[in-house]
Length: 90
Image (cartoon, rainbow, N blue to C red; front, top):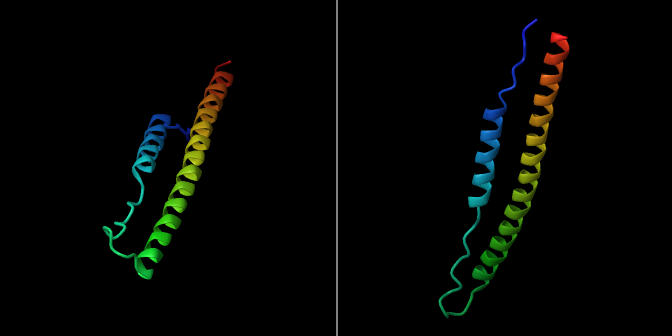
């Protein structure tokens, strides 16, 4: 039977890349109209932008939680792999 080798460093690098991408991900605030009267359309755009920003923040929190959980799972798998290898040597 083949041996499964966990490539923890590759997984950890991808999780680090995801964290960096999440930190850079945001929506820009639209121009408020430069002193002109804000039209209904602009108000709707601002509301949509606020909703989008809230959605992005929620996604970032959830994704970071998944990154941490994945990192913990990789650590657990590495420990399990070491334990099994030690048991097989004994």
